[in-house]
Amino acid sequence: MNSGIFRVAAQSWRNQGLPLRIMRFWLGFTWIYAAWDKATDPGFLTRGSSTFIGTQLSAYSAQSPVGFAFNKLIEHSIQVGIVVMITEFAIGLATILWVVPSLAAFGGFSMSVGLWLASSFHVNPYFLASDTAYAVLWLSYLLLIKNNRKGFTMSLERRGVMRVGIIGAMAVAFAGAGRIFTPKNLQDNASAATKTKIVKLAALKVGATKNFVLANGAPAILFRTKTGVFAYSAICTHLGCTVAYDVVSLSLICPCHGSKFDPFKSGAATVGPATTPLPKLKVAIEGAWVILA
Image: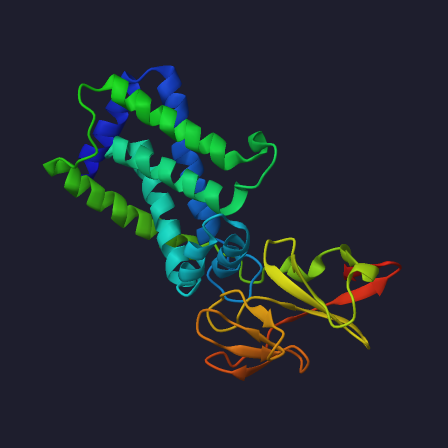
């Protein structure tokens, strides 16, 4: 069956026109590369890392027009990361090897639209957002497949089921192989950020708070008291939901499971299920600005 897959793939490459082959190679290779990048990133499935999938989902929940959906996914960040990684491998491999090409193209289109809604919906002007370009490219590729085939269906043939199974097994194997090439001593560069202006000090009154976003898209919250300013990551240390400040209880509260943190006691967890304090961020007053140091 493996030789059958490669024989069909080779024949498809020979029979297709140059425009279709260029689109197919670029999309398939890009999706495989994107998945490999995640598989070899030691922080992608590691809580607390700047590249952790949960951190990305938290950022999406704060800025996406469908942020409510990401709030639900944050609770299962690691599982979501694994599914995304394997799905990208599967779409890329299926595209390169010509296995259920219509279904793979539709999957790539759907994923691109999802990424647009998640991370680049507010990019202006729109042509700076690569997700929209990939969505259009996948859609064009899907329509080319339709025009070059007698029928247009995303259903599986009998032999196709076995080939899909092989693609799934290959995707899982590639994801596992990525861990072998993962750097063991990669330093997290999240703390190496240069000074960034957050807000003018005059605009932040004593007793006020300010929500802001870090360079990696993670949500954070700034406080000003009579003694100065301080800030915390707004990502709950339980399962990664975004916490919000409640002026009545003077606590940062997680909307997912009810954990509470005391911002005036080093972000300590006062109500579970979270037990770890919120990470504190280095902020300072420099001239007329509050900066992230």
